[in-house]
Image (cartoon, rainbow, N blue to C red; front, side, top):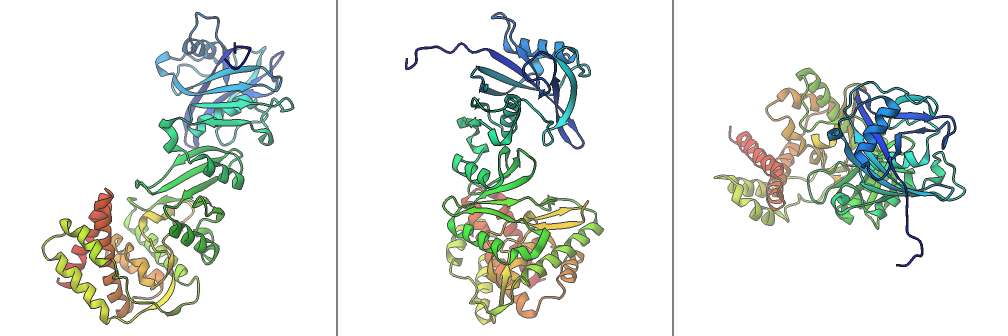
Length: 460
């Protein structure tokens, strides 16, 4: 034993009663009053165990009934987070916070001598003043961890103060994947302040790492770790140069760390168009806006001299990986298309998104606004590069293709159409090969669909 005194700390139980509303989840809070600790401050329904014969869940059910009048079935109690707390006066305790989403009765003030108000509050608009200990438990709960330390200093206020936030999240192996590493969290909080909730929104691929981060004082950002230095440099360069010219349609770069390959971005609105279903008329409107956005991207900088030859260097390697999935005649079609590239004239170079597809496009119907994200594949190239993956979205819908062209402001030239075919074949083979090697069936299927479509267009 390294110390001379054993801990004999009291145990608190705290009720995180959550109800869902149209505007989002809300938590039940009560305001302390009278001759109690932290009068005038908001707190969760909570209390102590009534001696060694009472367990934590029984105590929570009892306290909820005594303080708010609701009846909770012990089977509906869920463990949320445990907080080791030290008050400014130096007293320490263990707080066990429980989530409950079902009960009987309507919460109301039952102990008027220690509580003068009770109400529901959105997690993003918690009332002030709030007991710092309670706020620490809620912040840890929203961050998705099971354990936290909240040791206040002697001069700290009892009420929550962002400048004296002592919350330290303790990670478990089971939840490490849900949060960025400590270095990334520290970098993000240096940029935007305290973050109380991390949501992993990564695409279902091993190298994709993106989190949505909610700030303690409101606000939302995205924290992204690039899979390699090249993608990091491409996205940062684009976000610092021509992308801001797109205005509100794109996220803004808040901070970048090349050593971590991490960026913090402002959030944009809307929902992804990947898999979304809209009425035909609205689809045409959306695709018209997509064409307009593509034109704005390609006009982000003056065009430069014609680009180099088409990227055929990796064809053999990608073709070898894709061959087991190709149908009769596919290999011959791929090689013939690649051979035709030798006779194509190079096209002018403009800024391109590089991964311009429905997955990276977001539509907000209420704001009538279209957004584009993910510039890690951005580079200068022929404008038709950005229609390679998008073309799959208008297949079989000539009205959507026409909507894109109307929004773009001009049709493709014959030279662009020829290059679009070659680039689409190369992208299809690359996608099949990569998807096979990395367990991504969507990429494989899209590549096969593209080859079938192009072969049909070549030989109706």
